[in-house]
Length: 160
Image (cartoon, rainbow, N blue to C red; front, side):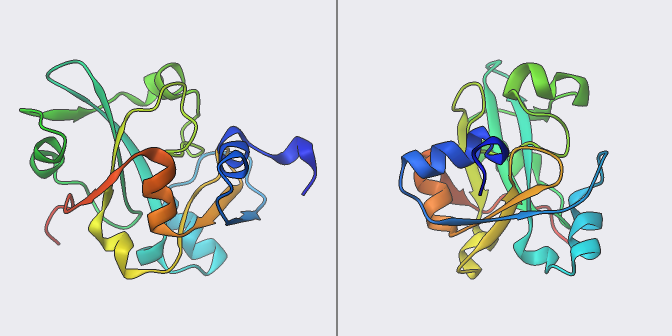
């Protein structure tokens, strides 16, 4: 892989000697993760999106869940010891994370926020997350994602 196509997330994985694979695809603008998974013929259960929230404490928290599911904000708040958490506004994603909508990944944000990965990830040897920009994906072992983000697993999905 050419040096100029590496994202910050990939450089961090390399630095930490974590195995991963990269997939790139043509995409000029934001499409939700479920649409991308369908377009690429990927299993949406193993394709995860990155959600950024803010708690009552004003701290930011990162949650990683399957693209075809919704987050249970009460469970998410409990997982990080907050009274409640709310999704940040789309317009604030870049300012807070350094990434843009559709390219946000839990690895290599401007600051390492507390990260929770839904337990569903444990069902797979490898999951798919954003590579750090639109048109880029990282295939990574869930335990390696937990390790590199300093995260943890928890049950944070809404019913359904």
